[in-house]
Image (cartoon, rainbow, N blue to C red; front, side, top):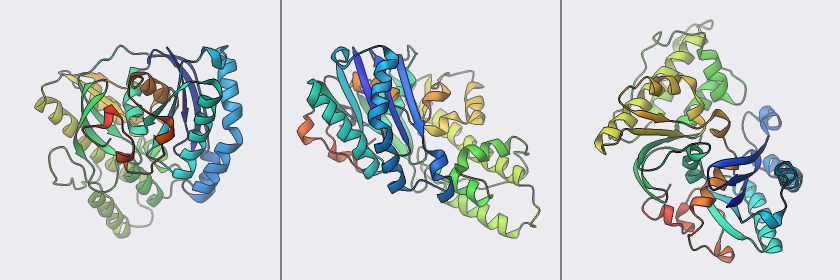
Length: 335
């Protein structure tokens, strides 16, 4: 089954074709990072216009790259949210028009569900497993029971993990995007240079606001020529230790040896190295190119949701509240 995936939830315009949820035929992504650098973050109006300028041509290019026509595509999957509404609408409108024009099954996908499915791309991974989903907008521990049944065990109570990386990156004077640039800076630092606090919350929940405040206060006290690499490395060490501790605790609790990571933060090399050092668990992580937003993961998700009863007329995009989307995969918890 060939699924055309479309993703425009934030600042990447992406179109992909995936076969049977696992084999990536084509995966095209146009990043807007350079457009948003001057703003120090994503500017929604700029993102929307950039999506509109390239989406139609990217669909055509993807089909051409795959040497396929729309008649050979079995279904179209599109991100409905969470994300920036005006960005999401660009992809949703395109997907609806294609589905109507070519009489294709339209499948709405929760962006976070897509991130989980990124681990199925080029992999034989099957549920059940425990998943750490860490991105710029979300940090969750998810008990993945089947391909379409999930239970949220824990979430962030304030800032998301990736958001904390970005904010501290800006505090350290790093250019956008702050998270990846902080990771680069941390390579030259001592991870034990500064002892930073760890939030005392429920075993599977997260809180990064206190850590963020502690770093801010520390910077205010330090001399102007303090070692930024040491602070970046210490901050990264603190967060990755927390993530590893909580996901391993959850894995033991539900008695699984399969740990999966997903989302933009899953590209962090320190986190990946720490997890791979856990000899008692089987660790699964997406290829680096599938960690950040892409349409291959959306196409994969569409394949696994192919039998859900969705009506194109009742679909709509959503910014944060997934209750507006009735998918079997979201019935037990709001991804």
